[in-house]
Length: 117
Image 1: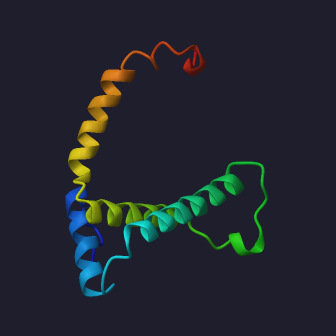
Image 2: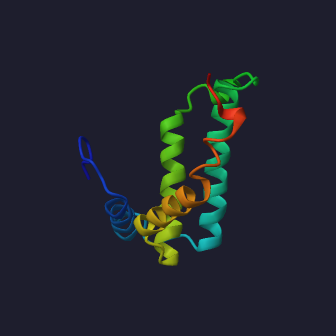
């Protein structure tokens, strides 16, 4: 499947993952396994961030890891869980932005810790 130079919606990404799982991956791992996979992948992102932007040094085994690829692994595992549990991520994201805007619309503007002056 060629995805170069293609802008995807979240819905399309969910459909692509579902199709891949059903045609290449045989079946979804169960939800608990995919939750563990998601946690593992988030840990790999954290490791790269800690070594790139934090104070930890890279181990030889860390040097070939690609942050974008690891983030895509997180997205993949999250999409798998959404598909399995019937979550429409587009709608969930829309509702989440509305919630954050309503709840935090003024809070961050008034946070002295975030002032850049």
